[in-house]
Length: 198
Image (tube, rainbow, N blue to C red; front, side):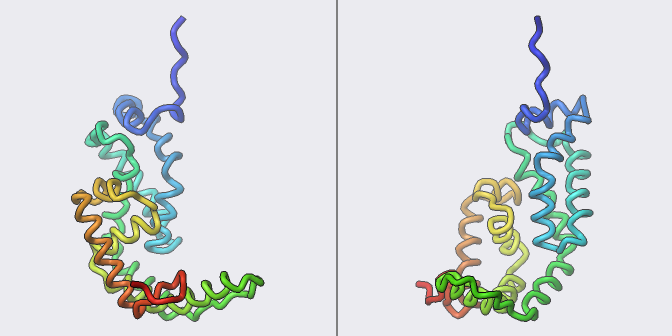
């Protein structure tokens, strides 16, 4: 008796992509697997109004280019983030306006929760909101992409390397440069602990 066919949810990314070359409907499993996180990334970069379209466009581009995906890469996650980041690049002005609005937004002091340390950390982080947004807006496009792929998407250095097509060492050096610049924008203050950094 032949083994029952594997469900798409049981297949790894590379196998799904490869099989979708002949059975396009299998690509839907990748959409289900990654749409939420690509959408969150797009929303954090450009706002929720643009996120629906950008996330959908990411998967449309991926579907059209799926025969060019190298299954030896394994996970399609970095590949999808690469497509999304390229689409974000087409919307850079919107991202810059979003950061500028965040910089000007009034600081939300929030309600006191009774936990002094958490309240102090929130207040310190909130007061850093404007300078942090200005610091992020002032980064080069490449540095901003690396930072936000770490901060929003939670990608590893190797995944960012694959996503942006740059060496892993370059990812590390860009992150180091970004940390220095943002620390400078915040006057050497780490908003998470409320003291000076370094």
